[in-house]
Length: 204
Image (cartoon, rainbow, N blue to C red; front, side, top):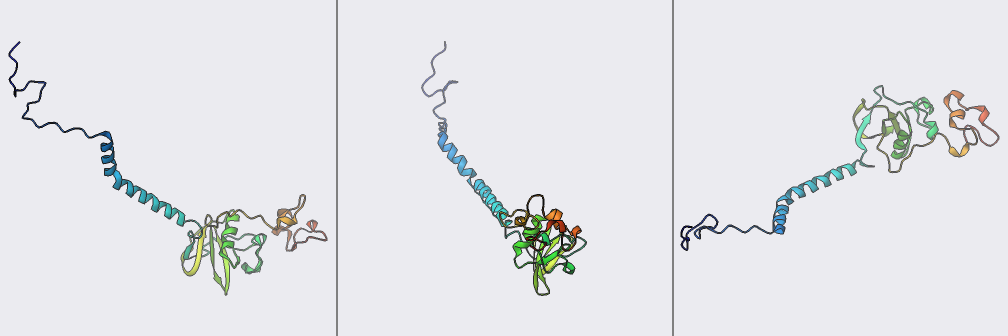
């Protein structure tokens, strides 16, 4: 019930006129824009990093996955397999393509496709031996070393769309006959005689 305050005096619920007015709160949109502006450099950096990572991943695709000037020697990890079943006929170890870790191949794609088809193959190598381009197959890369002109790759390094190749010529088989029971090494150099007739033989 006391006297009313004089003009210019302060009460608990009114700011003295001598105080500077409180700054107005910025609109929500302005706050959002300011926040975005503050984070844009970080966002740009994150997007740039993501782009670089994607570019690096793409470089691992064929042929970027090929390791240039890199050879993998035997080192006890040569993979001897029946390469004849995949079409190899020359350039094999001791001229035996049914038990070899190498064969003549004019195209590097052949190395990648055969390695992908061999269950135990982990690495392939493409290079020159005695003037001929060849593929080699390895179960590991313990024998890796620098080699001018050589190219190597892992099992997953192959052309897009590569699928495992069947052994032998699929067009030759009928009924219960197949490569496994007609052409495996256990049947000798001419295959299983019970499989052949007047049209088909071991060579065709």
